[in-house]
Length: 399
Picture 1 (cartoon, rainbow, N blue to C red):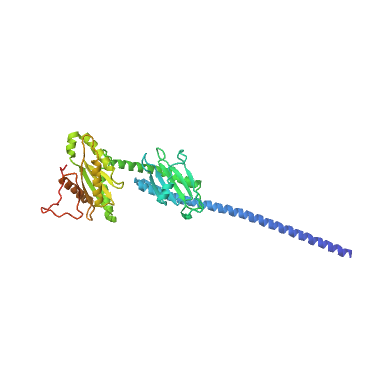
Picture 2 (picture 1 turned 45 degrees about the vertical axis):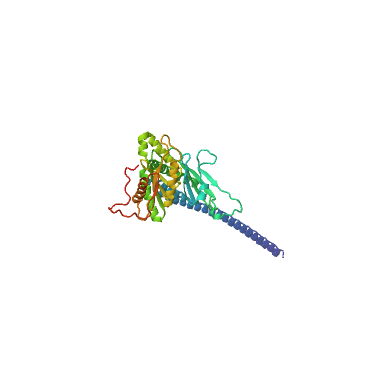
């Protein structure tokens, strides 16, 4: 009996030990599984991070290649508008960019040049970054935006993030380049900033050269005496405006005028004083033309005003205003000046040359009528001259 009890106790102990061993083994296995799961989570997280970094790097490389291709085309143009268009396209290739802007400050007293993509006119005016707000040396800026709670604005249209960097050139920064994101899920990082800085560094010389070329061309298109556009610019612009008006069915008018008896004035006071008179006349004319009108000195004392989006009545009205401005007060020893003008509106069969001739013929008629007159060219073709010529003659020698 005692042996049986002993064996029973011994068997119970073995079962208990087996159970303890099994429980310990099970706990160890579960602990190992938890450690394994934790390690796998860490590995998965690391892999996700690495994949995201690789994806971001691949995107940046792709964007960089695209920017490189666009910037590689800059050497093929010297036109400032085209250069800025390509630079903005390259800026738009940066990751997360929804809009871009380039600002080039103008000389003192002149408006800056602003080029944009993806921005409304109102946004462009608000977002035009001309430099750090604290007035310190030009440097890269990260811009953040806050909006009032409950503002009645479409959230999808709001600018959330921005970057602005100076555009370097040989003589120093020539302006600022800015990019913007409307996404709440995107934030520009140091890699994006470096991409924009690299773009600005590569674009800077092209922008500077194109701007210098434009300024030189503008100087070449100006009359040195009066500051108005010169004869070449007048005829080139007139041809372009005529073509544009024909293509889009727009109105176009033209005024050609000169000073009455200016040859006699020149002979009396001398050519230097006569030049001063012309400069004063140009200044008075410039004070009454509209900002959209294009005032030019065609040659000698003859001037031309191109009036886009204007009627014959508009041209006649401007001629009267110019007469009043020129005669408003005496000029030096010359006394009161008078001018005669011819006005014309564009006809379907006109090109630049025939359009100018009709206005010039109207000026000739004003001289024939007794000077200090405004004559409007006929809006329909003039009747044929019985002798085979035009009813309106030339104006050579008229003063």
